[in-house]
Image (cartoon, rainbow, N blue to C red; front, side):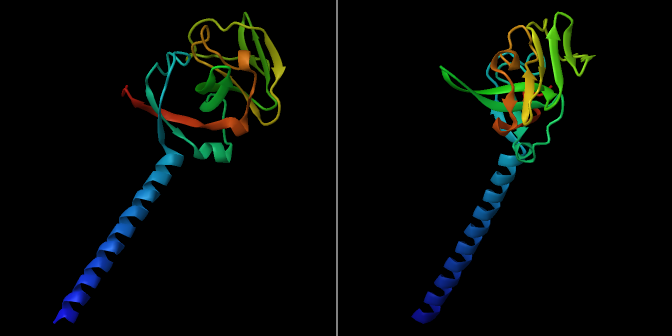
Length: 173
């Protein structure tokens, strides 16, 4: 009799262990997918207004950092280090490797063509005339008058890009 009870207890324990392994595997799979494809981040600062505002929560895709498949206009996330420490920064790609970027009182030109930037707020100041080096991008914030971007920090290495923004999660608009 005790042998039967012991065997039932073992079967129950084995089935519960198998269930837990399945649950943990599924949770790890879901977290991995979310981590690479759609990870949330809260913004700090106003340099991307009017597109994104201070304290908005956006979802970004880390998988694009692995593929390095960025396009003009993509909004990317990267870390910037200064004397105050590390800052996670969100900016728009305006120039890619080989592009000729000019910034003057007339606005921003890429390869000699004046960009129509309906998303930009304020006047774009600064004097830039450069060819974007290989494996780098030239980025600007949408709120041009207050943005600290490639006009100040230089081009950003593509290997430093953490991903690109997919959409605003909160607040919904």
